Length: 386
Image (cartoon, rainbow, N blue to C red; front, side, top):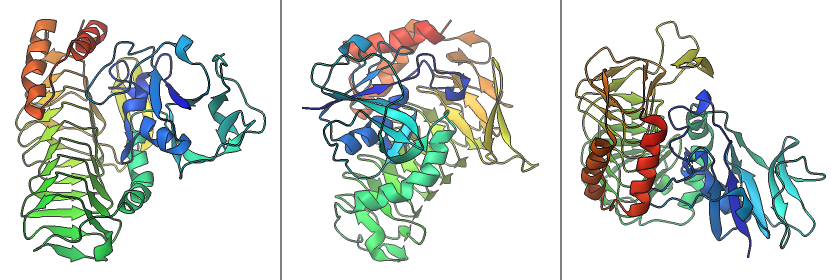
């Protein structure tokens, strides 16, 4: 029985702000799937774990376990978390020692009883397709490049047809709805890609859904125009949303434009929160971070929201803003970089305060703060909350 181990960078750099040190890179969404899910689909592994030195005690709802390198014993595949593979399941013939993309090794295959010895170049690897992920902004690039094919693949599982009273622009076969509650007068525009609604989603009247778009289980879309985005499970989304990735369990229940952004888990965006995703100069966007500027190579980039971050009503966010995990954004103008756990621009939230808020928020999505999750949140605050 083959196992899969994802290999996070030992020390993710500023390129991965605001998720470095917060959650394993393997848990991020690249297209409709988390990175580890993409690898699992490719190699057909039943058991998945991640080596994540930066987040050794991480635990969240539906997360994979974090293990030490000593646990990496074959039969297994060890794969880079910073690579998002593309394609159907592989048939790995005996004797193959690794997988590569454009000649660069991205995964290693361990035989029965073989212990992991660290990354090395592999002779005669199988060549695969995929997208290298150099940092958090590349999750938006993954949304742009991978989501359409992801939605086509997910659509192969079938649905229950176009909901009664809906308006479809394009081929109705590109509307994939699985036991969702869709009110009349919802518009499905599938001319640029499919729209996939997973089980137990809710879409209210007055919503325009433009593909490619994936809405995860138990998420609600409450009105507005939502296009070319990934909405993870148990989210609440309203307003204008474009080319944005929601990891899951986030809340944007009110009006306000959100474009070319990444929203971590347990984020809450207050009413009227607006992101800018294009500079007036139409020039390249940089991130202003504690260790200096990071070039993103993108002309469209909104805000990167770390896990458990929150914005007050009417928050206005500049292009290329980074909001640290657990931060609470109050007042305008909002700095382009907000440190983790910074509240009211002046003070840091205490550990007790952070755990108290998480204990109120998470059960609202049916998630108990277990001992493992509490230990993970405590360790997160210890790493970044000083």
